[in-house]
Length: 289
Image (tube, rainbow, N blue to C red; front, side, top):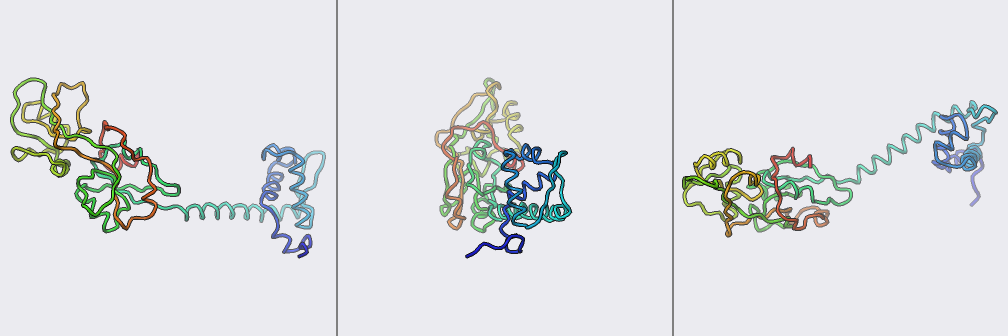
C-alpha cells in the first residue's frame, strides 16, 4: 500500500509524538541547540525530528536564522493544536492508568500491630484504602463485602475465613515489682473480647477500663493486675513484673472471605516477623504507616 502524500490528512495521522515534543521544545526555547539541551538529544536528532514533521505536515513550521529559530505563521498555528494534542495524550495516559488501578478496601482492627500493616506488600496496581473495624465485626464485614481484607487478630474470625499469619503474641499479666497487689484483674475494654477469644481465663469478672495507660496506673497503685496482649506492654524502664500466660496466644494477620478479589492471594510481605512493640491506636494511625 503506498504511503499517504505529504501534507494530506492521512499523512498527518502518521505524526509521531516525539516529533511534536521536539517542535514544542524548539518553539519554547527559540532554537535548535537550546531544544536539544532541554530534551537531552543531539542537535542532529532535533533537526531530523523537525524535518520529518515538516515533511509530513507539508509546510515549513520553523525559520532558522543567525539569532536562533522562530516559528512561521503556519508554525504558530500548529503550535496551538500541538500543545492541545500533547496535553490530551498525557491526560489519556493518566486516565488509563487510573482506570487500571484497583482500590483495596482494608479494614484495620485497633489492636493490630503497626509493624504488620507496614510489612504488607500490596500487588502492583492495588492501592489500599483504610478504615477502622472492631475485631468482633471483622468476619461479618468481610462476608457482607464491606472490606476486601481485614488486618487484625485471627482469633476473632470465624471458620469460613481464609487468613495469613503475621505473628503471634503471648498474653501477659503485669504486676508491680514490689508491694501488695489486689487479686482483681484489670483489662482494657477494647481488648476484652480479644483476650477472651485468645483463651484468657479470669478468676472473677475483671475490672474493665478505657485505656492501657489507666490499666497500668491502677495496677501500679495496687488495685489489681493488668492483663494485656504482649504488644501493649509498658517499656522495660518501668518497674513491672511480667508473667506470661502459656495457655493464651493471640495471632495477628490478614483475613479474607472466599469471595475476595483475586489479587488477595498475591499479597506479600506477611511472614512471621517477630513480636511488635506497639499496637495501632486507630485507622488514622494505620493509614499513616
